[in-house]
Length: 213
Ligand code: AMP
Image 1 (cartoon, rainbow, N blue to C red):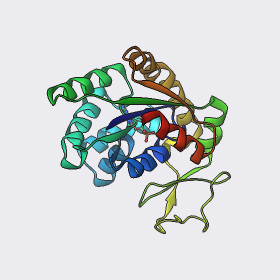
Image 2: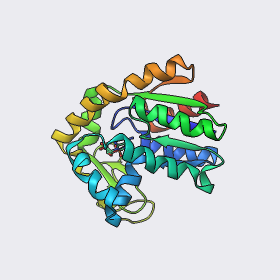
Image 3: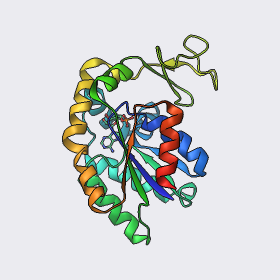
């Protein structure tokens, strides 16, 4: 099963993609996590991506497309995947479709998680992430049991550089301009489902699992 999660920054794509990948036994592929991994390893791609990411801008399509094409060819992706954060432009969607076509594959479902802008700003402002397992926390809505430590793996929690207010507003604007056209694109292909992302994490999880079943 191949699934795409669409939604603005802060919609809960990372949390939900992780949980869906466990329930459906398929891999979770996050373009943002792959880029942050490149940065921490100091690769050329990571260095090029850094300034775009810090400003809340999209990394150029050719760099992202190459990175994802390589990732979905790996053996662990052959059983399916949940794509989180990719595609983000129509050009990326077209490239993905072409790459899949070569292997006689298609995307099964695209789920668009919607959340109001006010809620996104609140969520991203208080977000902390585990450096080790990437589990997200929120200082008000879902605080860790021990301050600064992940409940699951005791990893150190940190705030993403692009969760500062200027970059957050920019990321929401970039989403509206460059990613929202994908909603129409996948709706025309009749593989789009809409999911309300403002309920509880568990409620949204159930809606997503129902939508892709
Ligand atoms: P995310 O972790 O999905 O919020 O992504 C963090 C940042 O990585 C984004 O603000 C972009 O700068 C970059 N990024 C992640 N995925 C993509 C993509 N598909 N296309 C372009 N840039 C991306």
